[in-house]
Amino acid sequence: MARRPSDPRDAAEAAFKAATTRPREAAPKPTAIPGVKEMVSIRLDQDVLLHFQEDGPGWQDRINAALRQAAGLD
Image (cartoon, rainbow, N blue to C red; front, side):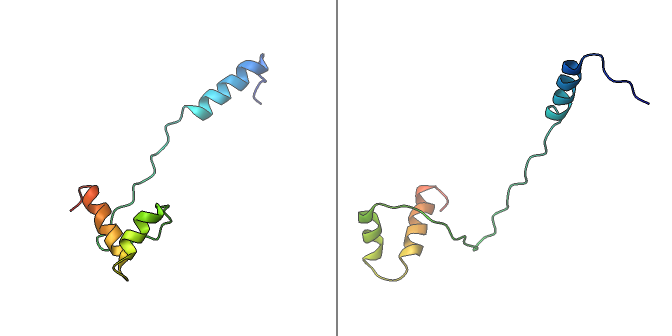
C-alpha cells in the first residue's frame, strides 16, 4: 500500500508538473489538395465586392484569382 505524501502541497505541485511538462504532439497540418476549394466567410468592403460583381457570374473565382496573385501563389 502506498504511503501518503507528508506534504499535500508538494504532492499537488509534483502532480501538476508531471501533467503539464509532457510534450504535446503538434496537430498535423492539412495538406493542400490542388483544385479543391473550401467554403469560408469573409468580410469585404462594399466597393470591393461591387467591383468584382460588375462583370457578372464568376465573381468568386475572380476574387480567388486576385488573392492568389496577391499571395504570390501564381
